[in-house]
Image 1 (cartoon, rainbow, N blue to C red):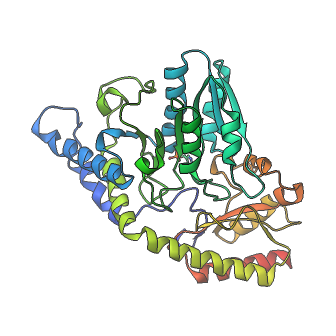
Image 2: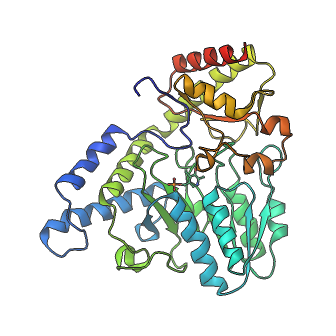
Image 3: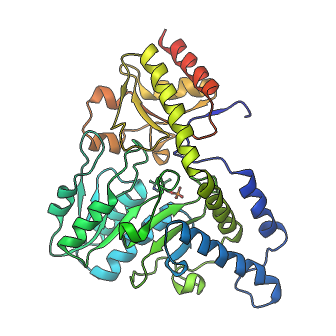
Length: 378
Ligand SMILES: *Cc1c(COP(=O)(O)O)cnc(C)c1O
């Protein structure tokens, strides 16, 4: 598997070696249950709290506002279901968008089944949500608004600060959640400046392991619990802590703190090199979504006339990993609900693939990719 070319960094990222090394001690030596009272558990307890403080400070939260979860999916589920059940009890209205990650969309569908009503706002054809569409959807019984920060298929960055500001201006008691899982690697996140109530992040999109994430819950905001059991996470999220995952997540944040700016520049160079090569060789290809205000690693591109499944399989045959968009719907390459919501032409949707660069990819890898594409199209 060593000469795999991995262009699917929106689906997950490789585990950083420094992150791995920071975790080992808590897998092999300090393996005790952090809830135990004896001295042996002391270090795990301390490291969980140090990590919490470190990750919280990275998004300008206080340490008592950050709750560890099993990942972005759980954070999204908890935010939507927990907030809605707490505030709405049995009925009420939620506003979200049609191109959210399935972790949000499926939570919204569950709430619909429970008797709540949901409005799904569509983005425009460039992949942006109009603030006014969100505000216009708000009703007297609206409990929660959830709009993702950066879309995982087309990479477009929403103006969360402005959307949240306008929602709160219309009704300050509405809770605002944003799925910031894709945003963490790309932009500075400041929960106080954004003024959001709930914000989801995940480790494995920033070179931490899979299975660790967090939900920011603004101080003073109550939401219903979602996982029941012990009194971990100050009795708000039960379950023995993923100590090694938490320590690794914190280490990945340390590295991000140092490198985020450089990573963005590297990804932009790779992206622009790729786009230049595409233009030279495949003038029929079309980029989906705006190139402005977009995650630096994301390219969503339609090689018009070529079926996307065929394209993905052919690249796979050459050891090149690209995607049809959401990893959750991969395995079977279905229709993208994101591109549907942007109302793209069928010819674009049928041929759209997501190529997502990581800062460690190389120009040589892109050259190989372009050669493989040329072979396919000849
Ligand atoms: C990856 C992702 C998730 C899910 O996070 P997991 O940690 O894989 O559960 C949620 N939202 C977005 C936007 C994502 O990209």
